[in-house]
Every structure is written in structure tokens, then in C-alpha cells.
Amino acid sequence: MTRKLSLALAIVTVTGLSAAAMFARRGSDAPVVATDVVSRGTILTTVTANGTLEAVDTVQVGTQVSGSIQSLGADFNSIVKKGQVLARLDPAVIQAEIERAKANLLGAEADVERLTVQLTDADTKLNRAQALAARQLISTSDLEAAQLTRRTTEAQIKSAAAQVTQARAALSQSQVNLQKTVITSPIDGIVISRSVDVGQTVAASLQAPTLFTIAADLREMQLKASIDESDLGNIKEGQPVTFRVDAYPNDVFRGKVQQVRLNPVIESNVVTYAAIVSAPNTELKLKPGMTATLTVEVTRRDNVLRVPSAALRFKPSQAVVAALGQPPADSTPGRAVADAGRQQGVASPTGTAGRAVPKADQGTVWIYEADRIEAVAVMTGATDGSFTEIVGGDVREGTTLAMRVTMPGAAAATAAPRAPTSNPLMGQTPRRF
Image 1: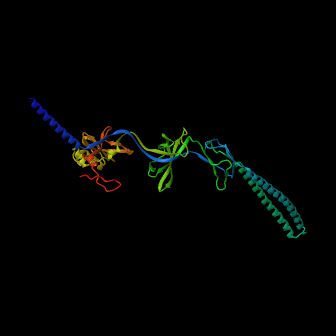
Image 2 (image 1 turned 90 degrees about the vertical axis):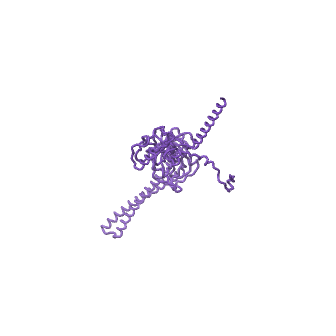
Image 3 (image 1 turned 30 degrees about the vertical axis):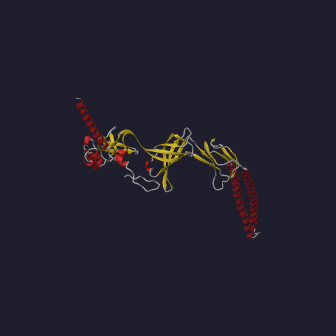
């Protein structure tokens, strides 16, 4: 009896091991399907660029007269008010010009007085000549000489009067230049740049040299970004922007696109356009000249049905479908429905499992259920590269999608030995026999 029981146990054990081996071989021959699910979330399309921070209102303060800096009334980071003295130039040279202009004016006025006296004398002589000529006591030539003297003196008076006006203008100009030796701030703001020191000589011969740069208010700044021409069509005024600066790598600053300038900038055959982005700076962390990396939100879809973009690119081969124990893909009902919807651009009644095919532009995803894959046509919307919005199609949140199928023996093929090489840098691969 014991012998029979031992024999039965041995037979059962051998049968179980054989079945286990058979199932193990079957499992090893089955393809491995990588899956993901349909989810809800945010689709965000962005454009990235680099830019430089600058003050919204910046004024460069210069000088219209030449001279040496006598004193300074402001320094870097000084907060100044409109009309506050920023610098003074040495006024000695201009004061000398004023004295010279005054002397010239006095000389011109004296000439006018002298010629006025001569005009009076010429009038008297002309009247006497006219009286004598009427009595025929002088010749006609003497009368004409008296008339010429009178007109000449009158013209000289007009010329002298013009000299007086010119001398008075020169004096006024010198006095204005004296006032310009005192350089004041044109606005309320903060000094972000100072280009001169006490004792330095500035020359304003061709253009006004810049002495100070004043920013109106650093609490309101702007970011000048360089947008590539390929991204220009996606940038619109009012789009939200986030950006970071190297000085504060953990802080995210926010702004909005205010303007897209149409003036192209060409560098190394690369065309870019300037976009102005608002940059509120209430904490005064941002400084002029900082380099920022910004992200412009082009499209945003919140709480939408979405699938991984890789699921739309997945297309199983005939070998994969056969390995899953299904009919060829062209004859499966789900694939046929997808093809009909794509070709006709209309919704066919229903596919396998009652799935309807949406109209218009559509892609195909493969649903994985009960060890089978099935093609379902879907309408796609916005995409951010990783996920794509689904705006139509018979898929729901949580639906399992096939993403990739690994065929049996793929791992072994991957691990196959490389062919021997004679490259001395790569070494010799041992030949297997």
C-alpha cells in the first residue's frame, strides 16, 4: 500500500513539474506590453528664451558745456529728486566769456551812439545844402554828396544796431552756459551709473557726454527677451511669463508680455525679435543688467483628458498582433473602424465594444484589455510634447493604453555578443566558437 502511494505521489509530482515547465515556457514566449493610462491634468505649451532686465524708465544725464568737474552731489545708488544738484562744473572759463561778451556789448552800443551823432550832423548839412541849392548857391554835385553822406550814416547805424543785438545774444548764451555748469536731476529716481569723478574734464564738442544714468523706479522693471523667429508666431501680448535669474535660482518671478517689437536683430545669420515683458520688483531683488531665462505660456488647458503622446505614436506590427494571439491588424474590427474614420473623416456607427469613431483630425490609440489590444480613433487637441489633449473619442480617464510591446527573444538579441573588431582604441572582442 505504501509502495502504491509513493508511486502515485511521484507521478503527480512529475506531472506538476511538466505542467509548470510548459506554462513557464509559454510565459517566456509571450510579448511584454508596456502600458499607461488616460489621465486628467494640465496641458501647457511654452516657449523659452533668454533676456536682460532693465529699468522701465531710464534717463541719461549729460552736460552741454565743457569743463572740469568741480564737485559731485550724487553717487551710485543715490536716491535723487527732480531738480537736485548732481554735479558742478568749474565756471571760471564761462565767467570769463561773460565778461568778454559784456565788453563787446558795450563797444557795440558805443558805436551806435557815435553813428547817431554823425547822422544828426549829416541831417544838418543836408538841410543846409538843400537851402543853398534852392538859391542856386551850390552845385548839384555838392547837394548829392550831402544826401549820400546822410544815407551812408543811416546804414552804418543799422549795422551797429545789429552788432548790439549780436553782442547781447552772446552775453545771454554765456549766461545760459553758466547755469548749465550746475547739473541737476531731471526726474525722481535712483542713480544706477556714474561716469565721472571730481577733477575729470568733460568735453561737449560733438555730443553731450553721459555723466549719470538714473532709473525712475526699480520697483517696476522690464525684461527684454530675444525671441527666435520660429517662435514669434506663438507670442502674443498679455501672455503670462515666468522667469528665473542666476542670483536667485530658487525664486520664480512672474510677468506678462507687453510688446513684441518688429525690428529684427540678425546675429550669425540667426534672426530674433525683441519681446518686452513686465517684471514687477516689489522686493527690489531684480537689478538692471541681470540675465534671465524666461518661459512664455503659449497654451494652457487645465483639467483636460489627456494621453501620453507616445501612445499616439505606437503602431503594432503584424508580428506583435500575432504574438498576442489576435487576427492580423488590418482585419481586426477595432483597426478597421479606425481606418474608416481616418479615410472618410466621419464617425462610423460603432467599432468593437461599441466605440464610436470621432470626426475630423484624429489619431489612434491602442487600448489594452484582457491581454488584447484594440485600435480606437481619437480627436486630439493641444500638446506639450509629453501629453496630448483628447477632445473626442471613446476613451475615459483610467483607460489602459498600450505604449510599447517587447517581443520574445528581444532581450537575448540585445545581449548578443558583438562582432570582433580590429580597432586598437576599442580593444579586441574575444571570438566565440
